[in-house]
Image (cartoon, each protein chain N blue to C red):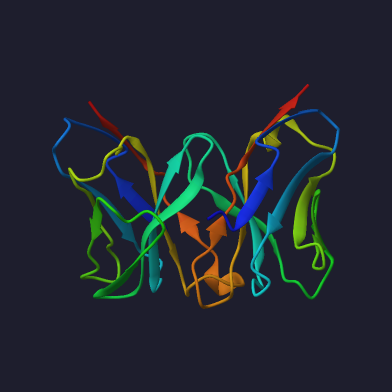
Length: 112
Length: 116
């Protein structure tokens, strides 16, 4: 049972463009939604996270948009750079009760 | 430096052999995890532990075993019962079980197991 559905599986964006990755969740009890970034041969690292009491969170060029009624959240990368090329995972959990549930990942390639 | 150390980085084994992957952390974290990563499958949870001498099965525990005798260490054994063991294995730790900054996962660099 996949509790967090992520799309697209892969994404190619021109340098300077906007990268958008979407996730949908099923469990309405989830209350913490992080995004992790993984470079080839490395472990993932936390990029940005949001709680459902806000609709948007921005950190530099990275923004999470959250739609509680639709049970969806998305990652936007503005002014995408080749150094952003990585695999991105969305995740969700009920705080303190369960481990993170991860989406299947999106492989982003930013080309010059 | 604080962090998660996984070893070995690469491992080759013959079919039918058990193999143990090491994971050590010096972050003083209570919770530790093992994930399996396959292309297009994301990160799937094998086992996790919130405290010494206690651990819980994740989504794909069959064919795997773990122990948590020390806070710093959480080794994973891939047994011969695991039908498709070739994969990239990631260990992680967090201060507490998931949720806000105290639940942030810190990952090791992974161990790539190939069964011949």
